[in-house]
Length: 316
Image (cartoon, rainbow, N blue to C red; front, side, top):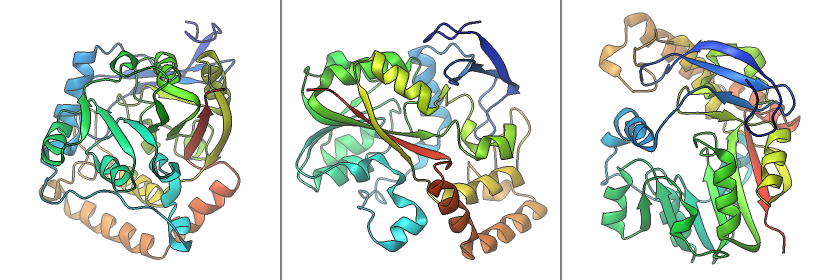
């Protein structure tokens, strides 16, 4: 097999990977390109299958509209210490026209609207319709399609933990380039394929997130694909939410068998065994000591954190 983006040979990175969060069926292989280090999952998903994957297996079906509230801007020392500026929406200025691709349950739409932005959203999970209908957001249910928007229209396009989910990232990046104004910026956050987590945790790295994550980028592969889409990689930084490391320990502590749901990721309190409850309480106590925060900040300082933010510019 060859890399569909640069044509170089692919090597098997990991075999027999499966959904260790929500129990989606199937076994998958992760491949790595010898040239660009891009990691990609061998899986053929149709748009209908993607819709089923997110609407029926992701946990947003049970999220309450009564408890919904927009995100808030992260600022100050504690925001830095916790890694809260790891999200794309935090890097968007006020009073701009923005499209958030993969807007989840719509919290970013409320955040941008409160700051004077003209905001649009698109989300594969049909649960976003409940939010859009209630709050009047301009949101499309389905996959991102650049033809749904005017060319050269947006100041900013964001994808917060989304680019790794799309079937063909190059198609998405070309679509983003089409709808961005000249001089506009795309801000993407995604798991770091060259971070410390993969060599340390191996197949149990929490951010493989099989089969939802179809691609894991290196800086090299992101720069290459951005250039092919007509975008320039201006900069990249690693800022990782400190909760991620806490989730990593919990993920490993209650790691499920293939075909089973994780009692951590699905919040299945009633199904937890006594030993699982005890170890999860111990890990919660460990997290309160802020050691996870210190470890996360250390690796981010060396650009080896598990979350990377890419800033892609459309040339004037």
